[in-house]
Each structure stands twice: as C-alpha cells, then as structure tokens.
Length: 249
Ligand code: ADP
Image (cartoon, rainbow, N blue to C red; front, side):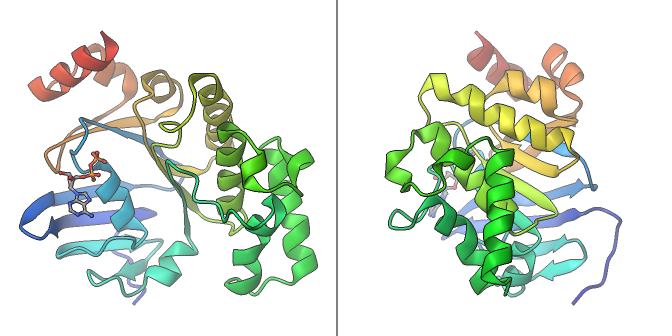
C-alpha cells in the first residue's frame, strides 16, 4: 500500500507496542519531515529503542500506523523489506559480519538485496568509506578495527543502500570515550548534508549542536518535542527536568 496521508517522510500514528503484557509504546505519534534531525532522549527503559526498531520493522506493533515515504509498514511487519530499503539503521554494537572484510560488509546487501552489479557496489562502498574517513581499512576484518572505526563502517554500510533516512540506536554507547567524537562527527556531517535522521543518544552536546528538535520519552510516551535550546534551558515536564538534572549534573 502506498497511500500517503501527510508529507512527512516518517509517520507514526498512535502506535502501541507490547512485549507480552508490558506496554513499551503507548499510542505514540511521531512525524518526521524530510531533512529533519531528531534526537530522542529519556531514561533507560522508556521505549526509545523500541520506537526506532518499530520504524524499520525490527519489531512488530499492535495498533496504530507507520508509514515511511508513503510505504505502509503493517503492524505484523509486512512491508518491512520495502521500508528497510528507505531507512538505514545503525546499532549500538555495530552488528558487522565478523567473517567478512569491511568492503564485503558494505557490498553484500546492495548486491544481494539491491541487485546492484558487483563493480558498482564496490565503487559505491569505497565512496562511502571515504565519506566516513576509513577507506584505508577496506580489506581488513572488523576485529582488526577499533570500536569507533567499526561504527563508522556500520554507518557507511547503511549508506550504501542509499537510504532516505537514518536511524541511530545509541551509536556511541558501546564506545570508549576517546572514540565517541569521531563517530558523532561523521553523523554530524551526514546531518549537515541534509540526511533525515532520528538518533537515540545520551550525548546531549550532540543533541544541542545537531538536532532540530529533541524528543523526550518516558514510560512509553513522548512527553516533549522541542528545539534543543528550549528543551535544555526550560524543560516543561517534571520528568524531563529530573532526567536533565541527572545526566547534566
Ligand atoms: P530504551 O531504549 O528507552 O532503554 P527499550 O525500548 O529498550 O527502552 O525498552 C522499553 C521497555 O521494553 C523496557 O522496559 C524493556 O525492558 C522492555 N523490552 C525491550 N525489549 C524487550 C523484549 N525483547 N522483550 C521484553 N521486553 C522488552
């Protein structure tokens, strides 16, 4: 189904998600216009990861409606393949194939799923490796790279599918502190180039610099969605204030 109800690139309407009896998302609505950069923050367990995993069909949902660029992602997950061609995802733990080289990690999906000819896929992969400043390591295995380098490879791998939007699920949480900056710099460059993105992160400096809006979640609900300068200087909801007091202390 391709019916488009709004001009948003990513649209969630009243989405509810349960894990058995536990409700992780409570009628969440989120609309992301093309080119917007959202940072999602909130306490651990508030549903941030579940929300973005629902957007690319890694989790089914019970009720509501999700569309990406007009493609309907059914609650059951039907439509996920089409949606994943439009949104790339980067995970906390990189999720690279350990037995494949960096270059092979980048070409496998375009060749097998995107039906891109091998030579073109390799050329595209090298372009994106240059873009994340790691082309010198194309023939190495992931285990031969630092965590920051592996995460940059994971970003390049997602870009090789030429997504219209990128989802980042705590992309720097598993990194040693000295590697966080290099990954956030790459994400910032993507943002500057106009990529639509949703990033779940606790990096509030990044949120201030890069986000058009900060979304604050708690207990499966979006409690605030505001430009960073407003959110950080004057959080409205008491739970947002308490959260910021804790993490910015
Ligand atoms: P956050 O990303 O904000 O830390 P999550 O989306 O990971 O939160 O989790 C939201 C809630 O759903 C938490 O209470 C978590 O324990 C629960 N949850 C997440 N994934 C699963 C799962 N696969 N099975 C059962 N419960 C889950």
